[in-house]
Length: 271
Ligand SMILES: [Cu+2]
Image 1 (cartoon, helix red, strand yellow):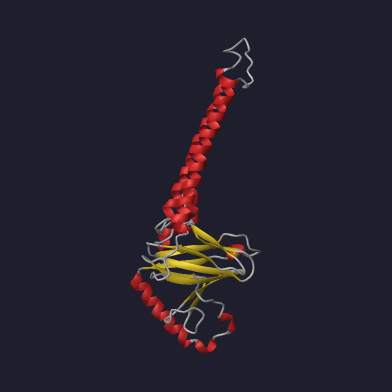
Image 2 (cartoon, protein in one colour):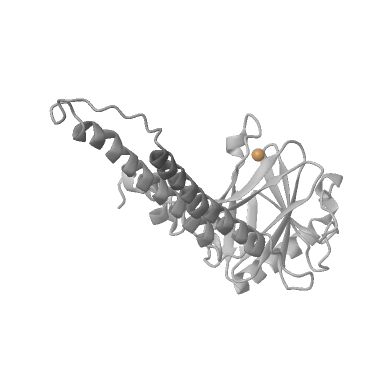
């Protein structure tokens, strides 16, 4: 039996999949990374955080070390310095320039490289990918799959609400739009998010590698019930995914008679 605390700290024990929020907070760890490229973000995040910690420690050592070193007890005769000698100015300037060149610009270079070479490097037009259209609205997510004909906004589309299903080992490309205000489609376990904006199609691609059930959140304060804008992403292995899709397609074609105009929010997939 689990204690209540254990359940709170780690719903993973209960579900065998995702680690709980409280678990992450207590362990100062991000949720499990299940994507091919999430480690790039994690690396940059850790690098920046570690440098911040390093400089904070350095600062604290100076802040408390110098008053100790130059205390009145140790230096009965005061010596005044204003830091405005040429040597001092050059020294301080060099430190500033070095930090800017070798740390700030380096971080910018790495994140820029990742952004251009990986995250914005979308699969080719004829590459075999999983396409999903996402409609964000106050306060839910709708997902649309092209169905058997491979075309969006047709009768055989599969539509789910707050229930995204994707396979492992295949690039998943999302195109999204918002019905009302700006939302942000956030997959914490892949470290990716992108804004869903009214009147404009935005996109994002990920590659996931671990079956399970994971969180989807809205990462843009979008109104009163923003916090309710959570959904689940179920990751299947390819065979399971196929089974689900076939089943879902069958169901959606059986339900044709209850189709409403509301369900045709999709658009022609564009590149
Ligand atoms: Cu939202």
